[in-house]
Image (tube, rainbow, N blue to C red; front, top):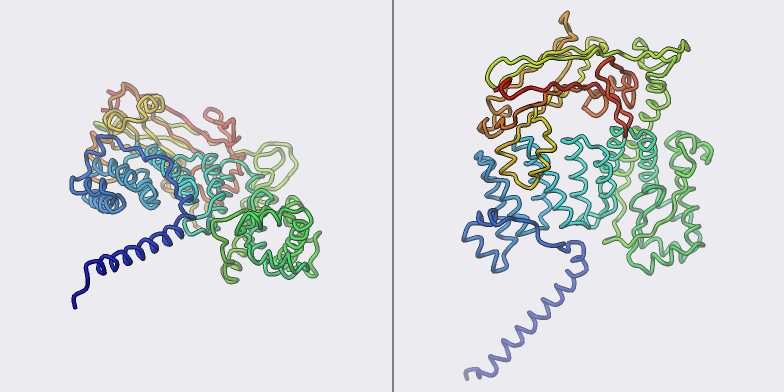
Length: 550
């Protein structure tokens, strides 16, 4: 007997109902995470950029397959890069992120291409803006904050901004619900050092150690808690990080956060954390039995050993890292703190100050006090000139009297920055900051920030340097037409040579002589002291007319 039509309708109705229930259950599981990826408005893509979406993909985007279309376009962008179609790749970054604004890898890789791989230094601000747009769209995860800090530091040397963005990264979990990796805090300490914030760098290094030891000692903290209810409550939590004297404790919900914020319970946890910290620090120092007085010798402030409890509702309470991982991280952070303390309290102490002289003959070369009241700074006697050697080719010729840092025939090189750009480049860029076509057709910029010196340490004239700027070709050999990279539309140009002992990538050994802020150098004519950071450098700029170059 054939089934009745009503029975078939009931069967399909049951299937549809089961499907609907499944969708509801799936959506219910997804909804708690939606707030971490809530769009903050559409990524900006101009009509000109949108016009580049192929018709077959544009239809898919309109029908709701935005992520699929974005993925296919990203593959096309990669093809463009490898085939040298650099002018076409930049709009695709914005189209892909317009279609799928939560593709973190696209924002990160796109910014890397803009700031590094495309070989056009005029695109560096575009990479910064691209990452900021990615942060606007993905403000609840740490990833792009750190990308902006790291790439910005590499390319703009604005270490104050880098420190700011690294700190923002530390406020957020990743897409997996876990806190930012340990390396973010190490980079933060380096940004602070390069920005001349030396005491802040020391405190950050100390806090990095406190954080790692606290996490490693968390089982010890639990063992010190005598209140069974409190211990049971803490077993649902996990220490995440230590920030500015606060121990961020990941908790599963607001109710647990409220209970742990009660003064009596909070005090018990803070006492247990402090005791476990002292034990862990003394173990690192090989001190037994552990005591607060001994542990405090490693820190500039006793408050570091008593972080205040800050319960935070985390996206997902993370599991503790393995003991082996934590042991490696604790050891690494401790070594970095020890090196920083050695340089602060011994090697670089007194750099450039009256009565101190740098003794390069010691096993560990350092500044030593001789008490003669004189400033033993190195006069760099810096200067340079420019020669035209051909159409769009100039040679920078100069001298700088840096100390000989060679030891045991190993030459320690320093780095100079050489730059040519339009006169008033920043003002010209600001007037057309949102018009890449204008920038490409009108702005000229070429910078070499890692020119090694001395060029030939064995040469009698090792204090001299020469560098040729050949703007008649693509210096990165990526196939860019030179007339597009260097259009030479401005009437005048700046040629700058700079020696920055701190913010350029100098060796640590040479920085022992220079000091944390370049205190070991001076110059009669071209010394520049940054009014915000106090970092000393030498810098000179020569103005050339267009006809002097082209």
